[in-house]
Amino acid sequence: GVDALIINPVMTSAADQIISTVKDADVPTVLINREPTADQMSAYDKLVYVGCDAAQSGTFQGELILDTENKATARFPTS
Image (cartoon, rainbow, N blue to C red; front, side):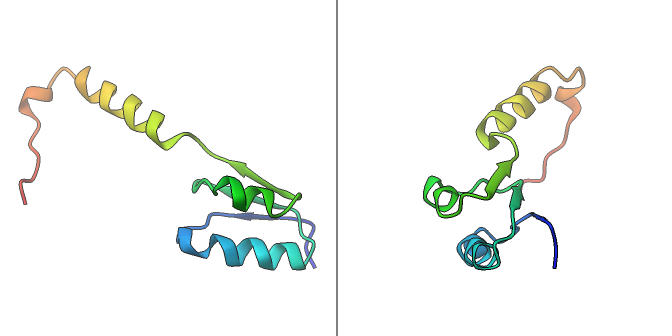
């Protein structure tokens, strides 16, 4: 057995199955990077999420790009 799991649910569609499986096994679990829904979080009292707000991260990244000195020379693929 294990004391706890840390899982990065790369396929968000798998989150329900992951939560069901760890709940059935009574294993405390930390989900990282992919934020589960409120319903998923409430499905198991030994489940926590550690990550960031994706929209806020995108805003910060955009601001960094705007502040980049050589942004005029950046080349972006068009296809």
